Amino acid sequence: MADFFVPEIDPKNPQRHLRVLQTEFGFRSVYDSVSFCNRCGSCQQVCPTYALTGEEPFSPRGRNQAVRLAAGGKLKIAANRARLEQVVNTCLLCGRCTQACAGKIPTAQHMLELRRALRNTVLPGLLQKLLGWRSRRPGLFRVVVRTGLCLRRMGLLRLLRGCGLTRLAALRWLEHADDILPRRINSSDKTFWRQALKESPKEPSLIYLPSLEAAFFMPSLAAGVLKKAQQKYQVQVWEQVSSGLFEYVYGDLRQSRRLVRRLIRRCARTGTGSLPLLTDSIDVYLFWRRAPQLFDRWPQLARQAQAWADRLVFVTELFPKTPPAATAVAAPVRLDPAALFEREGKPFDQARQILKTHFKKNFVECFYRDADTPAFGYAFVRGNLSEQIFLNTVRTVARTQTGTVFTLSGLSALELNEQLRRFYPQAQADHLACLDG
Ligand code: SF4
Ligand code: SF4
Image (cartoon, rainbow, N blue to C red; front, side, top):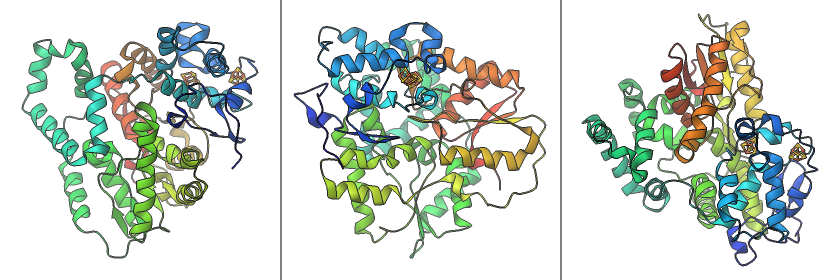
């Protein structure tokens, strides 16, 4: 891997940053990567935040320009902190700009570097702490989530909302969490999932690493993935796995690196170092595929990370190659390809193909201008913007009279479902893995 010279955005803390970014055209330093932006503006119109605000600093071009100036030392971070935080925290990290850009400039990755330089926590403090426990204190995290779900069933959240306590800044995220999490859980899926956890095969041929949503809030997703995987493989489930994605996006890079390294080592230690690794979250999949960029200072680890990333399997690969008979549905279906960092590549093509073969003419092709679902908890950070952005998706769903929107991430399905319930209850969202067949 080339050793780039990087005029750092944050020269005193190089370990907080990626030294090189894994881009479409190979590894590049952040400075090189933003410098390739020629300010042509082809990405402006696809950016949801620019579409809403019409302001250059909230566009991909403006954001890249801010990073270039900061990295070149022409824009002082301390003096412009408040404005830069707005520029960074409003970015959805959706990668629509990269899709539209001929040079495939990874603006979302640049935003993460700037976020790290600003060292702002982004998420509400309590939520940040709670999600951080997932990797630092997994046992405690599990107890807190189970207790929270139990208290919710007993009506405590309703009471807090009724008293107006969830309007307090520190607790506002609770209201959103209460809205998006499903109220009823299919008990047969739950039983199937628990049973599968108990009956781990002695000689597995695939490791399933369920996402946070699948493990806690969407047993239908976990069961759907497992049923499909068991048709081809002896599946071993690794529970309580922290992907490192949360730390990468919202926390610190060093912890994220530690978690990915822990996973790579666990594979080697348990003798599962050559088995395919299955994930149900497109965000986690795309992040793990980029694992080598986390270890560019350690060539041996980077090679291990590359070998590990090459074994990743996304759920779309579990669907049969031969097309089943088309499923008759009353209303059209569509795919919402919302993901962190990018929206094109193998899993997206496979997902489209699966829906086309399942639903034939009833599959409505989604153009990237149409779908806007913010990914990975954006609504926790920017409730005001996210609602308007979600409304664009709801409008498209209503205009095409769609019945079901399939997503590639459990969290996107949960969040979109909440907006559909409010504004267009005729439609629903579901993870593609829950599709039969
Ligand atoms: S990010 Fe790409 S499309 Fe956007 S202004 Fe820069 S070069 Fe043009
Ligand atoms: S990642 Fe999304 S929100 Fe951010 S600049 Fe690109 S298109 Fe805009």
